[in-house]
Length: 125
Picture 1 (cartoon, rainbow, N blue to C red):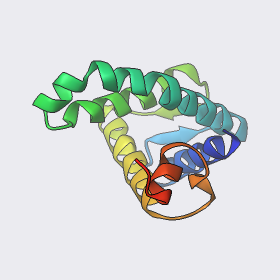
Picture 2 (cartoon, helix red, strand yellow):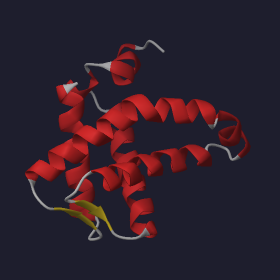
Picture 3 (tube, rainbow, N blue to C red):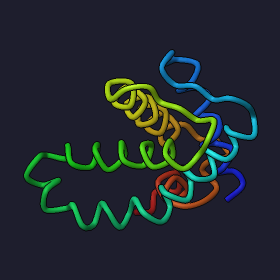
């Protein structure tokens, strides 16, 4: 769980560095945002993906992009000191988070010690 939290923190740092509309006030805000984002992705996102599955089929997966966008939106709302200015910056931040996670899924490393990434790495589904 700690490794997942640190990975989320690094992803959010990358988002803040790449996108001028994403601001993090300090390290405490970053760690809080990473924790909230991680908890949302662990608990709420799978539930929302299950509920939106029929819509995802109809939209060829686009609905799940908006589920991911919602995770960042909720994180932004819950954590003072973590700001995303504007809808299009939120869309871009979601794309960056997705791209980094795709790269992490394909790259062996310590972040693959738990969960889905470990199963993919070992060849199990």
